[in-house]
Image: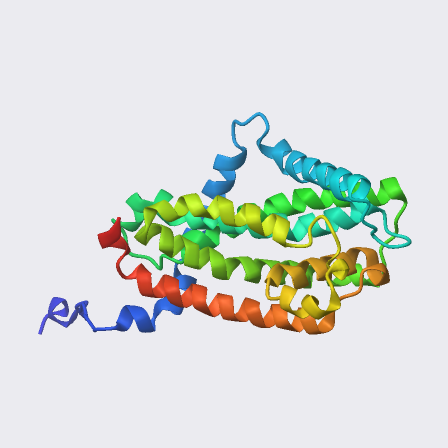
Length: 281
């Protein structure tokens, strides 16, 4: 028998349901695609733009100024005995901006990559998840303003600032669940993309961004934490200003539970609708 006859041949095995069983393993296998999509989004956001990078400074700073004037000077809400009101507002803007960036960008990401999705197989969840990178870069830029505010007001944070990365992760988890759900719904119902900006605008005022959640009456405060961003915002402020903005622990626990439920619903909805993406686009 010649050596050519002993050469092994490749076999293609088609197995029903294998893609579903290997889905999370495939996400790891396609991790390079994740970084490519993330880098492309970063390049599109900042390359050859006049205000692209500056916008990450301008948007949170101007929002902080407006909220400080409206709630701090006109409504005369207090931030406590020690904390400057602008610092308290910015502590609420940081997690909200991170949440809204992920939610807004991810909800439109699948449709904006329709050509890629309809031609090549890969776990579609990579597309909305790649938008997290851009949001984190914007968040990092926003932290520079936080440092500037602390220097301006001569405010020194306590040891709680070391736990800020934990609440950054929680803010991302709070955004990923609704973002995956919205990304899938937009593919199925195209007009839902017009609802997303309204949801974000409503959420901005329904969350304690421009005010402290402590002003909510005690009998309603636990119910108020059904909005998961309430617990996240309280956590951010606690990390930044310490004891002057304590965490309401029962409400924070409820917010964590809601985040877990929303993440489970978001992943499940995306996986269920994902199978029909090619037909719906």
